[in-house]
Every structure is written in C-alpha cells, then in structure tokens.
Amino acid sequence: MELNTKHRKLSKTKNSVRIPSTARSRLTKRKTVVRKRKCACLPENYSIVEFPPIWNELRQNGQLCDGTIVCSDLKSIHVHRAILSAVSPYFRAIFVNSLKKGEPEETKIIVDVPSYHMKLILDYAYTGTCAVTAENVEYLLPYADKFDVVGVIQLCCQFLLQELRPHNCLGIFKFARYYFCGELEKKGKLYIRQNFSRILKECIEFKSLAYDELEDILRDDELNVRNEEIVFQAVKTWVEYDLENRKKYIPSLLSCVRFGHISYKYFKLNILQWQPVVDDMKNQEVLYPAIVFHTLLDSRPGAEADLNDPLARPRIPYEILFAVGGWSAGSPTSFVETYDTRADRWFLSIHMDLTPRAYHGLCSLNNLIYMIGGFDGSDHFNTVRCYDPVTNTWHERACMYQARCYVSVVVHDGLIYALGGYNGRTRMSSVERYYPNKNQWEMTTPMNKQRSDASAASFAGKIYIVGGFNGQEVLNSAEVFDPDSKQWTFIRSMLSPRSGVSLVAYRDCLFALGGFNGYSRLNTGERFNPQRGGDWQEVTEMFSARSNFATALLDDMIFVIGGFNGSTTIPHVECYDGDTLEWYDAAPMNLNRSALSACVLTGLPNARSFSYLAKAVPAAGADQVHPA
Image: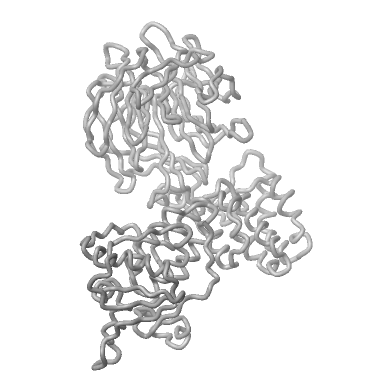
C-alpha cells in the first residue's frame, strides 16, 4: 500500500477542533496550540467500543431518524442527530446550531464526502467500528480528521501501524505527519530506523524523500545499519536520482556517513572515485579528514580505530547480544557480558543477585531472558530465573519438574522447551515446556534418545535436536518434534558425532557447529535443509575448534562465542556470513569462558545503556567492568 500525501488537505469549518489549513499562516498563536495538543490517534491504546445493537437496527430500518446528510455524489443518508453528535463535535456543532444561538436547529447537512466513506463513518457512530482497508484508509482518515471522529482516526492509525512494511513505511510516515497523528508518526520513524537497509532496496518512495527528511534519518545514532557502506549507498542513490538539483546537498549528506566504520578499500574505490566527488573540490574537502583518518590507520597494521573520534562514532545497535554465566578459571561464574556489534566491543557486568552457574540453558522471549537449569560445581538445578533488561532485575520463575544441566533450550510458538540434560544421576530423554503467561511447566512427549549436551532449534513449525551424549557414547543422531501431533521422528544423522554442539536455524537450513566427537574438539560444521531432505553437508570450518560454546544470530550472521578447545577455555568470537560463506573474527570476550549461553534482544528502549556510547570511558581505550 502506497499513500499519496500530495492531495489537497481537507479544510474545516469554524466549528472544528483543528484550524483550517488556509488559516494556519494567519493564526500563528492558535497554530502553536493546535500542533501541541495531545495526539488523537494513540494506536497502542485503542480498544473496540461496544455500542447498543438497537442503534444500528434503527438506522438500518430507517426508524426515528431526524436528520439527513447529503453526500458529494448527491446520495442522501438518514441519521439520528443525537448519535452522530455523540461521536463528532463537528456534527454536534452544526446540528444544534451552536454558532447561531436562537436559530432553529439544522436537520440537513451537505458534506463534500462520497457516500461510501460517509457510510463508514456512520458505521462507527452506530456500531463502534468500521471496515478499514488498504483501499479506503488514505481517504477515510482525512475525512475522520475533518469531522473529528476520534474513534475512526484510531481505527485508521491502528490499521496503518499493522500495515507498516519496508515498501510503504515512508508513505505512512509522511501521511501520519501530515495529519498530526503523532503516535503513528513516532512508530513510523522507529520502523524506518530499524528497517532502513530493506527500505533502501524495496521502497520506491525513498528517492522522493526531501533533503531534510533524509538527513534526519542518516544522522540518527539509532539508525540500524550493518555497516556504513549502506549509509553512503543511500546518499549515492538519493543524489543520483536527481543529480542536477541535489548535488548541492552532497557535502552535508557525506558528513552523515561515519567513515571510520568503512574499509579503506571501499573508501578509495567507491567514495573517492564517485564522480560528484571527483568533479567537486568542496566534496573533496569534506572527505579530507576521512582520508587522513584512513591513511593513518592503514599505516599501522593491527591498530584499531579510535571510537572517540567523531568519524568513528558507532551507532547504537538495534540488537544486543547477552552472554550469561559459564565456566571460567576453574569455577562457574555469574558474569554477564553484552556485545555491541556496531562498536565490536564487549562489556562486562557483575550481577550480584545471579547465582553462578554453567551448562545451563538460555533463551529470549518477549525481550526477557530466561536462564534455565544448570550446574554450580556441586548442585544440579531445576530453577528458572528471568532477566528484565529494562529494569536490570532478575526474578524467580516456576521451577522445572526435573533438574537439568547440559540442557537444550528452545523457544517455539511462544513457549519455552527444555529438552534432555543431566540431573546428576542419569542422562534424560524427557521434555517439558513452560507457559510464560501462566508461569507453569508441563511434561510433554519424551525424545527417542537420551541426550545431554545436545542442541536444539525451532524451524518451520517444528523442533529439531541433534547430537549429545547418552552416558555411553557421543551421538550423531537427530530427531524432530511436531507440536501438533506431539510425536518425535528421527531424521538423517549428522556426518560426525557431536556433543557440546550448537544447532542454529539460519537461512532455511539447520547448522550444526563444533562440539566433541569423543576424541577431539571440532572446528567443523554441517548443514541440513529439512524442507529438501537429503543429507547433511559440510560448511566452511571455523577458525577455532570448540565445544560447549554459545551461538547467536546477529546482523544476519551466526556468532560463535567462547567454549573449550580441548586444553583451555577461550574468549574467541567469530561470525559466519551466509553471503560470503566465510568466517570472520570479532572482538573477543573479556573472560575466557565455556559452558556459557547467549541470546539476542532486539529493539530495547534502553539499548543505548548497553552500547559503547554509554559504556565507554572517553579517555580510555580499554573495556571497563560495570556493576549491574
């Protein structure tokens, strides 16, 4: 759905709450009051209103009607003036003739609105709701705005909020701004920030943005872009769409790009060689500090960019990776590290109210982190703790039926599954699942095999689990659970036995990475496409062999974190890019850890507090420990 924001805005009579557009330039004081009023749309607060059914019955039967509305297509609609006045200050003012006191009340109104849209507004007046669609919302909202029918405005804004997509969000954002739907405008801007890369590819309206709108987006610290090459590409795409008229904006737009996060090779080949830069000395002057920055950095192999330099100021990440607990320096730990992917930095926190543990399960659900089971060196736990990153607090949740360390944990369809594990006596095949809304666990169908130190993932409506240890041997078998039939079924076995393995659902495939095959730690991986069947296939090897490590999906890449390499715990982190099919080094953790777990939270309202911009000490280059 694309919205046309260029059509003439509907003006209003003196009875309207809002000022006619033609009068806004003259009534500057009144204008300020209107624009600062509380937004009427409030889409997140909307709820269905129930009106007495008799109202609509009277309307449909044409009974007790005492007013008439004549529409622009000359169709007349009989109404009940009291009912229409109850939902619209505009109609109330006209029907009771409040501007001409002492004159007879009006019973007939002529409106410049087609009968189709007028009937939708009447549907709301008589029933509390109306059918908002992609085809009618562009006109229905302005008409509701004209008549001050707040309920219809809310319905339209709620619909548009649900319809936000990369291809239409810019149109909806402009539409919301045009009609002063502040809450919808705010949500639209947030959506644009979070989905900018897709918008650049999919939204044809991007090239029609005004200069100030584009600059506002590109300068935003919270713009969610995997790298700054995307920001430069946005500048290039927008400018070249109308080069003659837009080239004057190049210097200002280039200053939106954080060149310290662009590779020297890309900078030389794509930015310095961009024709508008080659042809214009002013553009070259804007880029001079970036040239000096990259030249100095390139002359010192192995040196890291100074993130305190404005050219290298990192943006605030949309996704925050949390690595929790694990085994370090011979004992379990309660430390939590968060990773800022924009700055490629880890920050260490001490959570005083978190019990040290390792070999636990970890997952995120509704932007909360659940820590399940585990082992502290002596006890095996059935306890569950929940972390709220906004309040920075841990809370106890209902305990599992069975103690589980080496447990496999997965979120599926809003529920948390705990599969297998070790209770201190035996390796288990049992499975239980947690209902967050009820704070209750229930037992469900056990697996075909006993599995501890296995790994599970949710994919295409089913739950998969691979590898593990049954007490006698390391397993290469894999099985799948169908929640509808509540049945476990074996699938093709992996190429290698793996315990301490990590299973990740990524780009239509399941990736089984690393682990221990009974003899050595592995740096190998394999993938399986459940929808195509067939065999497991080898994937590019990791740099480090590791078992009992953590994995997470971040920036559309697989991150592997820490683990045990056969002789020591390691802090090393690397990421797999599905586009290049290659592994890349990322910044190591502050601690060597194995038997840890990790998960990712997205769109946190306090994401800045977990970012480099909040954590870093300006004068120091080292990571700091911050008590939580």
